[in-house]
Length: 258
Image (cartoon, rainbow, N blue to C red; front, side, top):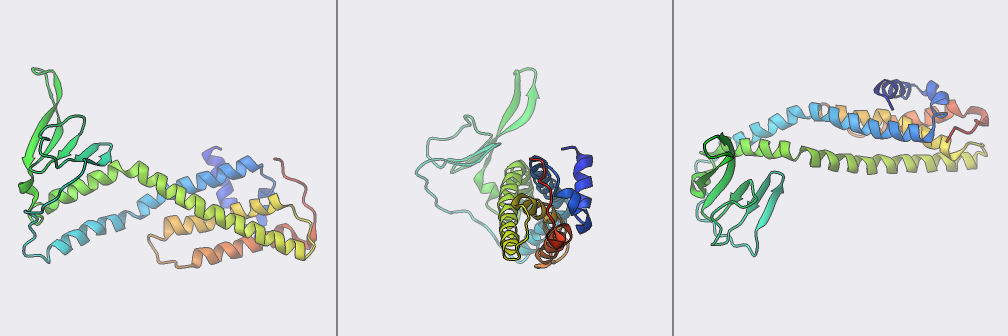
């Protein structure tokens, strides 16, 4: 589905009068629209969440400012085996006695040192990286290293962005899919009770397109405003209004192309 077509369908989905056209869309087009809706709304939510992310750093600094002393030297930890803290870049915590150099890690944390590869090309040595080492003690004073810790936090955050996006996308896909199924079944039961001849797939299409406003409000606008259950209420109103206007008087709608 082209971006232009997606935008066209999105704006049409905001008008209940246009659903007689929307329910005639093919099943695969409806699914593509739903997947793209989640994708773009999650991308946009990254921008609307920027104020919250900046506040996290401010809150971190504000919390540390309440401490007069924050030193973690002397903590005794033992591990049965090394722990991979992150796969890309590979960060390993290995507190065994015999580890003192890098193998395939980007960053290695031992009992006494933090060792990492630094991009520093050398024509003389024919190497792209240089190994640097600093004692763990230099990082034990949290207050003195607050800015460095904050920088590492943001670095790890950006490395983890693809995984974070996948998790958020999957969770929202499950959430909104269940809502669509639930409202489709509810509408179908109501149609049976009222003896209206409406195809289940047509109701499903209404449920998919009418959820657009809820997805947009919850993912894109909610980080900026406290909307509460308003997006859900708007979805319920949009869904049943679209159903009423599209299938009024029990009229039969021709089967949509599959």
